[in-house]
Image 1 (cartoon, rainbow, N blue to C red):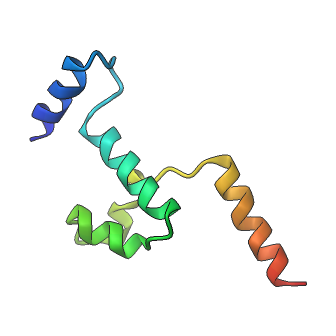
Image 2 (cartoon, rainbow, N blue to C red):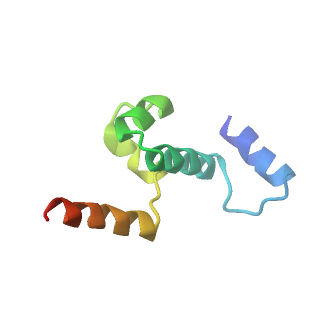
Length: 76
């Protein structure tokens, strides 16, 4: 399946660096950005351990700043 998806990326003209794993990172990151828990991503991705999900989730610098700002606001 992984090589099939990678082949689809290549057929679409996407250069190296795009693979089934990059697609999983996009899906995982979007789910988290939409407010879904890592537990949900874990189940959808079929991982037995939560720490196996972390490599698929990428957060932008803005998302990290927003998280810190939310913590700061909670202490006012």
